Amino acid sequence: MSIPFQPAALAGSIAFALGFSSSVHAAEQKVAQAALDTIVVTATRSEEKIENVPARISVIEPATLEQSPIASLPNLLKKEAALNVAQLGGYGQQSSIFMRGTSSSHTLVLRDGMRLNTALSSSASLPFIDTTDIKQIEILKGPASVLYGTDAIGGVIHMISKTPEQSGAFITGEIGENKTYKSLVGADLAEDGFYAQIRGQRLETDGKSVLDDEDENYSFDQKGFSTKFGVNKGQYGLSLDYSQNKGTSDYNAGSLTSQDFENEMINLRGRINLGSQLELNARLSQFDDQLDQNAANYLGQVDYSYSTTQEAELYAKLNLNDQHHILLGTTHSNLDGDVLSYGVAYKGDVSSQGYYTQHQYQSDKLNTQLGIRVEDNEKYGSHTVGQAAARYAISPQLSVYTNIGSAFRSPNLNELYSGESANPNLKAEESLSYEIGFDQALTQNSSISLSVYQNEVDNMIQKVDGKLNNISEATLRGGELAWNWKQDDWFIDTAFAYVQAKDSKTNIELAKRPRQTLTLTTGLENEIYGMSASLIARSKSKSWSDSDHNPGYATVDLNAYWNINPHVKVFTNIENVGDVRHKIEYNWNNYYVDEGRLASAGVTFKY
Image (cartoon, rainbow, N blue to C red):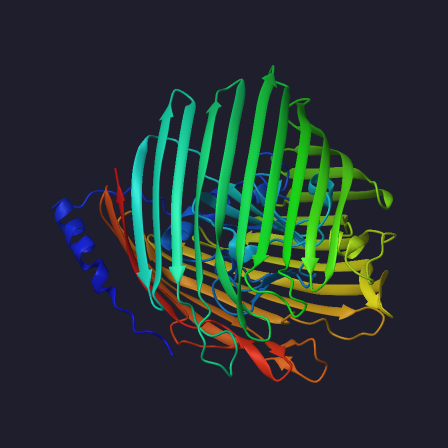
């Protein structure tokens, strides 16, 4: 049962906000620009207008991220039609991403180029990643192993962190149902190319039940901070990022139990321009992901899992002229794992060296991308992937693109070392993808886009007779249709995605892949105020049980904000207005269900 939302606790703060200034000024809030003005970096490792990229890419804009600090990363990603984010409940519960029908281990999650997929499972711990200092999230759909290596079969989710552009400070508080609270505090310093940034955050919630036949609430709490220091000049740049997030999450393991989590990220990046034609970039990073259970298992042991990913990367950008650009790079990664799970213990590691090159041609009408990567893994040896893509502007209003690429996923440490099913002789999973699409400006205010793709995934790792082997294959076919309209402050963004994901050998549909997804967001926004409504609808999907399906569902979210003056902003959000606790995954004799409605309100003070 939902705890009634009581925003009275904000009354004092909002009253103070209203009195802070009697006049209304233009706010510093950045309203999302038209899609064609959006700058992205993930597809090519260089800043590009999204209209020139020969691939399908979407962006979660800064305004969306700032609208609700309480919103978790899984909830933010659910509004992308090409993704099915299956979360077994609310805050802190297990989450899996299925991009364009690929498996949950086929989407690479990055933060400023640093991989967050754990060494143990090939997927990221989405519920435990905080987005407090994230500027925008880029979602690149389609193969991306040439530039990013393993795990990028379905695509890449890239979180770009904020870099201070001016000095200032802020404090934000948001409260909501289920005794949910989040507080943020931050300060920025920027002067003459030098900058420093610090952020702190804390989130607590009593949560809700995660199964449809129980009433116990599953609580979650986290706290963390991040810092960034650096310099950005015309000829060189250097930055050091550090962030930590830790807390406790209840979850269901036959009964309610809990685990402590902690993740730590260190990212050192440098850039130097050697003249106008050559730019060198380097990165050193480490990502630690730790889980400790708070209760002993049936053997009397307290389980844990520790994962560490270390990376070193060096790449050069060579501008031969205004049209021809070469990218040359190498990446070294080392993965370490230490696990105890129900009596199965192991310590393992694996290292890999990647070499890649990419050529870009850019003109007023034609943009091409041609690349190749060779990965040398100490376990399975060498593997080569390639990609070719092109976008051609038939007219200022119409462009078409095509993209052909191969990708791979290396076996993770659990598959190599964990228990009797492990197989140290596993090979990489492989894929070959074909995609075509177009973008058409219908009027000055509206546009339409269409993409159609097919992805063949081979050598998929599957357990047979108690042993993991490369025996499974999958065929993924689908498409995406989107329409966008904007007139003055009013806007409509809608997208429809279709995917058919089947086992190539048995022709059986793959689990947790809804065939149809529809998203729709409409509203008005400007520098002073805004409001919007969002619809997310998905069709039924197959469960892991052949005799059961996960039902389809539709939910609606509402959002609003008001910049009272340059220093004060108030906002409110209602996730899942109808409190639709839809079924997510069959669990023997019951279902995991969505958390349902979460209404909240907050205030931000800027200085």
